[in-house]
Image (cartoon, rainbow, N blue to C red; front, top):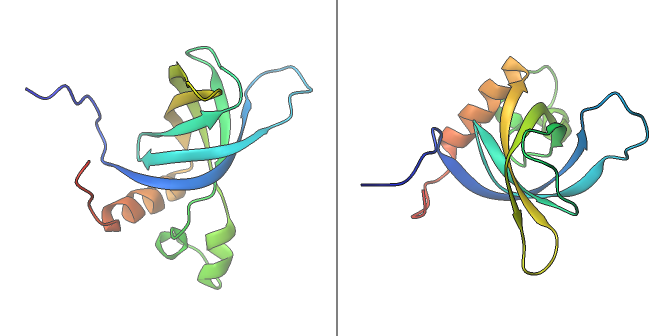
Length: 131
């Protein structure tokens, strides 16, 4: 019996994002990093520092190739550069041997049009043997 608990298909995708802890305190500069895979439910992020489980993060992801799936006016190139903005919660934290941390982020809130575009993008992505 499979131990897979994921609700959504994920695809490997190495792209950049910025993220910042959602808090009432000023001062934290957004971190810029990469994510390694993405699904309609969340993503796997490299982080320079740990964030406790349950931490809410404001996310701005670059999603290469998703522009053609967005509802927008104007050239696809304009939509392509617009980041996916979401609120995510840290659900997994792992320290990496090489330094840094790996965060499992579950999307808590995504603009409905962005989520719809992301789902279409993921459905159109080729399957890989690890999915």
